[in-house]
Image 1 (cartoon, rainbow, N blue to C red):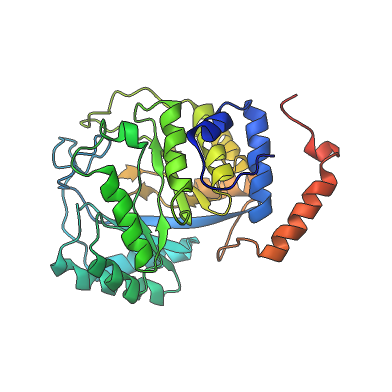
Image 2: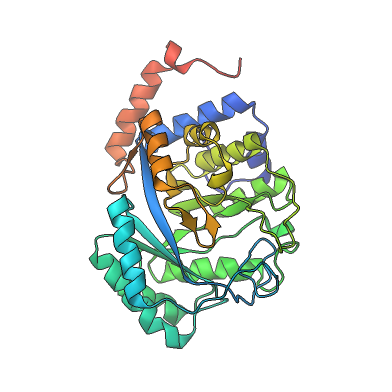
Length: 346
């Protein structure tokens, strides 16, 4: 089993991608079991609190004002509507409620509403997450003081490929925002997208960037491109299922204590593909029939899959304690020579 400390190099990450498929999954599952209960999954719900008319030019995004996708722009939702959605999410089994706004950055006039949303959702007993674009130091502190648990700001892809997808915000801007969030005391949710037209080396480079941050993101969403008519990437090639699963597995190995989340694109994944993603170390997903503006599997369909796989949505985060990790490691080592842990690469 691969065991490496930071900093990760591109060649090390690439070597993981190059492993035989079953060997990679075997190693990823071992790492996963050292840190998490393999039968539990964290459930989040994502709500668009401000839709469309975004000034950014992200080529994958239907919310950009630069592309004609037929998406109707909407103003910031009223707090009452957000709270009602959060109540429904909790009733459905979600433990984290994520709120996304199509902005380059939040306006000062909107901050009181955002702070109220955080406080009211927290009062329901849910973890809170927001993705609002770039933040100033003061805005980050205000959100943290309101009780915001997580802030999402994806790196999307490698530094080398990034300029082919986005020109209105630099890679360093994104890294700076993540640092601002950390300095304010919030947890970080940051990941990327598979299927933008990138090479495998770009996927490896993205994971190197994430794994080598001063503090690894607590949540790492791995998205599969949803091709939206009207965006520049509407005719991109489909992502190979095994390539996507490999990305999940490498993310798990390189960031062993992070929650690796199946995010956008699950509607295009069959049950078998999702099951292999869970085997590869994914242990979080977005729940509900809509993901910002895109379709997502409905809750009944997800519950059926959970029952088939004997997976249980967790009530709270279940990262194992240090002593539990030691006990789990000893258990794994004792079983290494049994049929349960045969070398699937042979």
